[in-house]
Image (tube, rainbow, N blue to C red; front, side, top):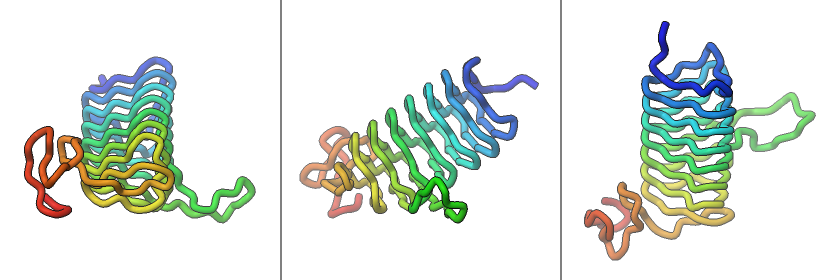
Length: 180
């Protein structure tokens, strides 16, 4: 059967992975068993997608990203280069008694380059995590967070611009308080 997605010759994709139409998996990437990847997803080079990860439609995962077991990435999410997701709160090489803590990245969120998302957290719809940030707690929808640990410094519009004086300077959308 002819597949309707692209896999580079150097990528390793488990037979047990489900990949949607129009998706592209690039150089030296590995997709493990029971992964579900939606349509029109870009998995850039040197990326690792661990077993049972779920990735929605229209997601862009840039170079060198590690997405570990327990992570769900919803539709329209951007994950910048070298982002790492963790999945164990108390990692020890010798421990046989470890627990996966689930992480969710909600629709339309963006995570900047070199950020770390500590497991057990939710990044809300259309939130933006600044480059190099360390997410250690839930990020509200439309929040802009930066730093280590990541702290909220404002809100962003669905289009990505920071809200200023109750209005998006890019698309002109009006905002009332902390919600549209």
